[in-house]
Image 1 (spheres, helix red, strand yellow):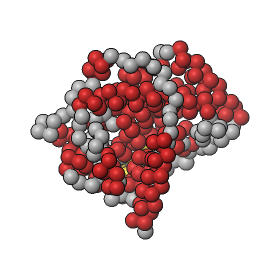
Image 2 (cartoon, helix red, strand yellow):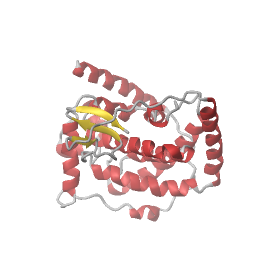
Image 3 (cartoon, one colour):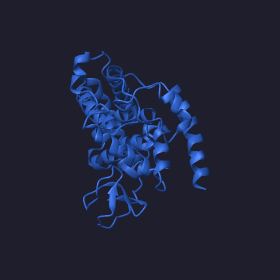
Image 4 (cartoon, one colour):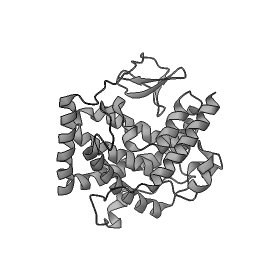
Length: 284
């Protein structure tokens, strides 16, 4: 049954991905290309023979092990293909994002995604890192795309950069939801490791790149003007209680056998997806 469900997820995600590839994102806020020296703070990824690579290798193996836990592979495949406004859904932010009901919020967030894509492409061309599954000649979670994915570079993670930028923009619209938004952004990034498409250091570099890029974006007059529209749209929804739903969270018991999706021990302060005894819960 699980195999059939995974095949269905793969089929749906493939169609969704093809549609996403055809989608044209709006113009970025920072229209002029930044000098290549701007990205010099993104240092080279660890080489396969370095001590630092042990960090990446651990997470590569850990990601492969997580695929065996019910629901983890399905979530990783969903995140691989979903639109970002579907990733940050009403369970995360308390409202439903859509092009029909929240066009101003989505425009704000998708414009910063365009900024992230430009920055990410520049750094990828510089380092040209090979993806994990291609390095080990080991199928990824989505093997039917491996041949094409192997032709592209790994560092930093484009999905993760775009996810973090989208998340940061959302935080400026609804700052009270920052913890939930950033936890979901971290899980979204780690699912790239679970897929075998990225090293953990790829996603770490993506957060650093997105943070620096966002600092330049948020200071523009255009961003501030669009943010004003997005906040007004959000406030109208909150005031009218339109599309608002309470997130149903499962409180996990404090135990040394509970872990975050990144493989770290969970405690009473942990948020997001918690894995305990082979089951996933959502921690408050």
